[in-house]
Length: 75
Image (tube, rainbow, N blue to C red; front, top):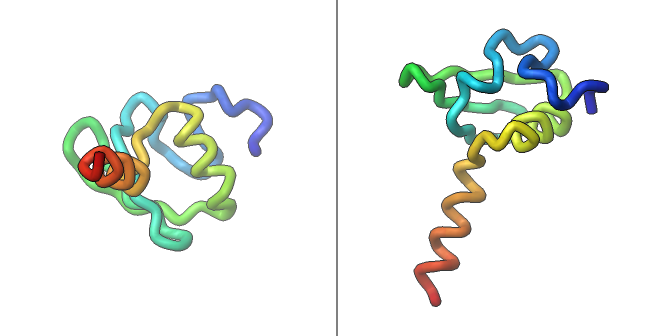
């Protein structure tokens, strides 16, 4: 993990965490929804660290949200 996980910027990624709403990961490719409504794609050199950074900044993981919704629907 990068030394400063609390940083609003991840190395090689030009958008600060406050601009991000949610993400979806497919293998090494991340699809990210920005607050301005645009969708971007990013393939980091270290997918594990990038995902940790997103989650550290409370950026919603679409797959995780979908799982929680499905689980709640079965109750």
